[in-house]
Image (cartoon, rainbow, N blue to C red; front, side, top):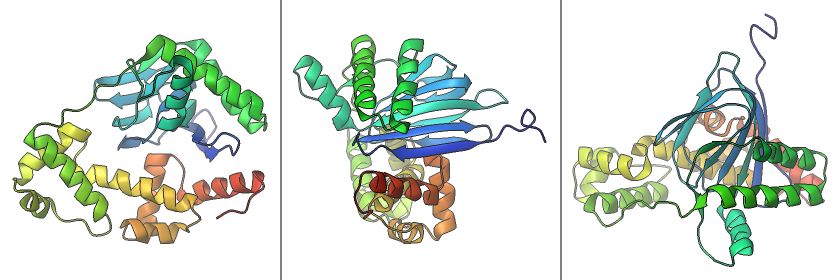
Length: 287
């Protein structure tokens, strides 16, 4: 088939050694869909062609070129193509610490900041996102760092606020938090929903409802996301994909490959190679 009939998918997910606390993703996706998941840090995305449909708790956002998507930490979301030809985009994943440090420089106040809007038409800010990518790819640390700070300052000025926090005082919210802690602790061999509910002194359906309300996804979906997060940290530290798969509770490496690719956007092997390249570029030995 021709490129027009079936556009080619490609992706690069990487780190730039000179900007710690930042992941970068440039990609074109057509058939690929991201399942519901969340990030420990922030997401700033800019579509350069096509349309990305981002599923958020408040509904679906149709991100067209010139739109900036902002997602706060731990906000569940999904993504898929909004048009048959898919979408091309540049995304930045700064850590919570990186964004909050910039906010503290600007305001002098310490604490967690957030964004009150999830998608805004802002071609200038969208251009800044692609400029950060371009500067990082060219090895221009001064430009990449400078433009990133200008971007975050602009987004905070126009769309910043204090993120809403989930209520934690109800019994259901407390049960959900305890269930999450139990799943994190026993990630390799998690209990069934019935067993977990019995441990917490509640019913399976009550726990399921409370967990979904608190974290935006059911326990089994959250656990898959958490396993992929931990696998990323193991790959960052130098583990092989097969070792990471076993360590986080996936039955085998193909199981890790499937979920990792769906959530991160690239296979674990490609992710690990980019990490190794980052360490080499930085003049250090890959761990």
